[in-house]
Image 1 (cartoon, chains in turn purple, orange):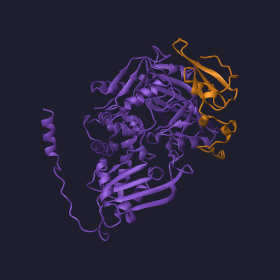
Image 2 (cartoon, chains in turn blue, brown):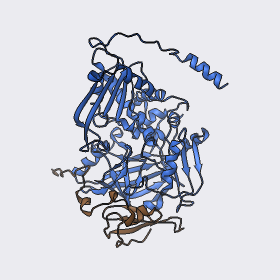
Image 3 (spheres, chains in turn yellow, cyan):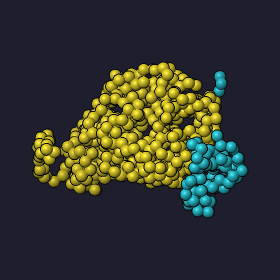
Image 4 (cartoon, chains in turn purple, red):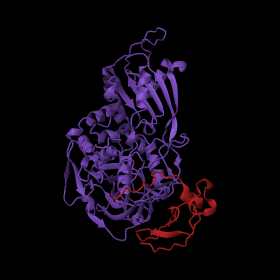
Length: 472
Length: 84
């Protein structure tokens, strides 16, 4: 099943009892963040739709935690809500291979342009912006998708980029854009800036969950987030052209903000509470001058609480971090069985692999450290045997406890690239790689002989029978 | 849209470069929102005194005026390519 719009997905969440309608009065600060953080602490972390917002009565709605739970994520992937995280991992991996089957279609008079605002634009009065964490430098769009094109290839959909970047609304029609230099969006801006040109940009808020997931995924430069989304949905993805530029945007987005990146200037932004659970410092970043806003009637402003884990951010980017690393490893190391990089955007990566020879586990770890994402993010790399489930942390700890010889299997590679938002990265952007090889030593390496106890019910037949008895 | 007045002191950097940027759109007068043109901070009048009151703000999140221009640049400004 696919969801053309955020609204379609919210209907499904409601049907599955994964949506709360919060009708009590809500202050923009601190209620929104408190409500969303509390929701994430609930079993199944439901989405929460708020419609009684201070200063926006009859004019605004906020939704958050839309992709907050693994049950929601399973629905996004077209699975039943009881699908395990590991099953969702392999579902996403299979869909990855269907990229070639994806396609897009364009529709006229799209819902995202039902209302057009092109003068006296004041984002603070149009939408219920709020301070995500108490000491943020202002009011952030925490779940906005930024669309840009390569100015040399304006008709090439594959290189049109859709990325989730942090954005601070600094003035009524000015937005600061924080995009890492290695992200595709930054490459587009740099190319235009070198020619003194203002790059058109569109910011989309309130999109189908499959697109939000793909926009959070580190794809190759010439892979389209829209095509990938179509592969997940199993049908052409519906797009529309912006009114004032040539960018493609999701036709059913709740809100589209059209603008241009101001070339040759930088602006003070931050701090912002980030996914490591700490505040980032302030920086000089790009600014976007807003030219036009379009939106659906009675738009839903989608937001995302980000802070100390577990938050929607962790679920949203968990598998979209794990699967690309798995694919990149698998391409040259077919012994690799599974990857769990779900924690803090892959600052820790757990890989299950069969072994070829002594030291192979360590070799896999070094390959993780040289994948595009692993270069800066993966600082703790744990390798386990192929019959250990990397999504089962009890099994992972067992492997560390019963396989690791500290003098041979623990390695620290010093002074490597690090991730600047990680508070231990010092100076920011530098770090160390910790490798823990928790695999069983293979010839010519060795360990004193021991006999393993067989696993029981490996097909899960008895477990299924017992669950049937329990559920009547 | 709220009327712009740029002589208000910013609660973060203390410059007198803040202005009234927005008011509650439902006309209730529930809140006003201010922005600083210098450090780009924003605050709403309904936020707690630890945000809106200069004397009660956490000093770890204050901003020195000199820092605004000298802070780390995430994306350095590239040189312009020759028009040729």
